[in-house]
Length: 227
Image (cartoon, rainbow, N blue to C red; front, side, top):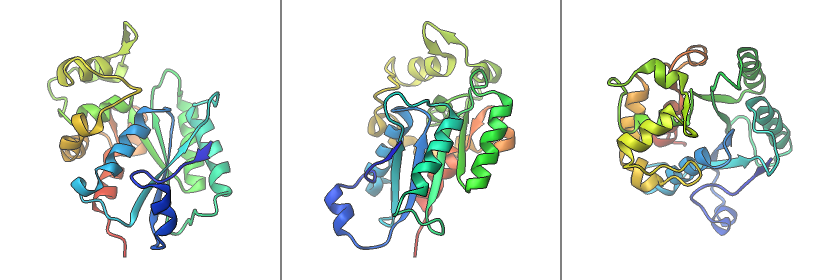
C-alpha cells in the first residue's frame, strides 16, 4: 500500500503551504469506486464548504494486493506506522469497506472491529455495499424491499443495489470504475447524509442490518472547523 497526494490539491500546493492541516487518511477495500467518491468530494471543496484546513489522503493498495478488509487494515497499519506526516493526536485513519457477508464472514468482521479499536482507526462500513450510500443520495429506500437490498444477489454480473442505482436513478449509466461525482452525487450529498440516518449507523448494527456510517464521516468532513 502507498500514501498518495491529498485529494483536491496539487503537489506544489501541498509542499508550499506551511499551514498545518488535519488529515483523514482513507484506505478502501475497493480500488477505484470509493476513492473516486472522496476525490470528488474534496475537488468540490468550495461548493460544499469544506474547510481549507481539512485534507483527505488516499492510502491505496497496489496491483495484486489482497483487498480483503483484514488485509487492508493490517497493511494500512504498516504504512501509517512508517508515515512521518501522520500525527495521531490530530489525524484520523479511516478503513472503508463493504460488509458483504458472503466474503467478509462474522468472525472476520469481529476481528476487523478489534483491530480498528486497537489501532484507533475509524471503521467505515456499508452493508451490504458502497452502492447503498450512493442510493441514499436519491432515496430513503422506503419504497424498496430492504431484505432484497441486504441480500444483494447478483443478476447478470450486477448486484441488486447496483441495478437499482443504475436503472432507477442514474438513467441506465453506472460504472464502478468510473463514477461521476459532480454530475451524479454532488447535488445530493446532504440528502444522502439525512437518508443514511434513518438506517443503522453503529458498527454493531451494521454487522447485520442495512445501512452505512459513511454519512457520519462525510458530515464531519463537511462541517469540521479546525482551529
